Length: 251
Image 1: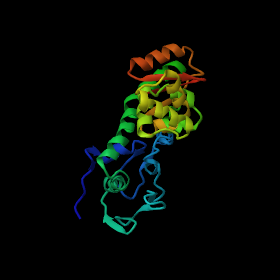
Image 2: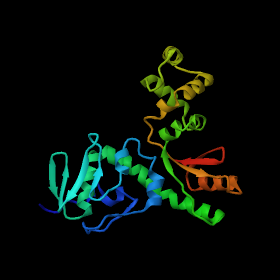
Image 3: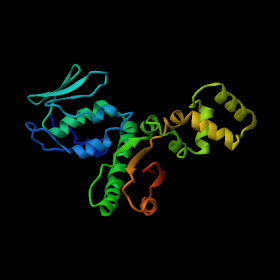
Image 4: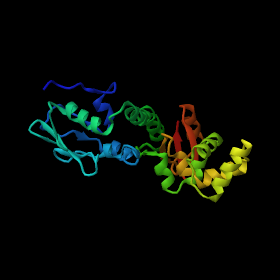
């Protein structure tokens, strides 16, 4: 078998796994950059199996549930398929083919990776200048953030247009209230601000489900001039919401 292409939908396969440092020696494991992996752990709702780590010569791919990709004597095995592999590029290319098999999925995934790569170091440097130490700056999906009880903050991310589209498309929590608001919208083609805000509050998670939004969660309790730090985040092109000793920043 010939060496397979090292790219997956136009990007090198290693770009998809920034928490690993690879060698091309199959006898040695990729080196885990644990601090990077920790910051990505709660990021991949749609792509959650991709955060799984190699354990010896196997990794769970969970597609279908319980599936593993294993490497034995230069042969990759998953489900009932076997393929010859020459290096870690070949191996991770197989994993990407299993988990991110379409360009649409790959593009959504890479949007998260690129967001992290573009802004994480800029944020980390600013915090280091303030605290003279590195701190964890996790990136999380907006859905995970809502599930932690941060509904009020996430309401600020939703636009009025998001609510209107959500009602039209049925992407809201269905109950008598939202049904009545939807009927009102269909009949009069408008909503009051009070109606919009109420739907945001009751259907925040549903309205955010189709948004590929990821946020950096940054502790600010030790930052002396939080307003200046927020101004810096805005200056580098990020949107910011502040709450209870934290800020979240996002595009």
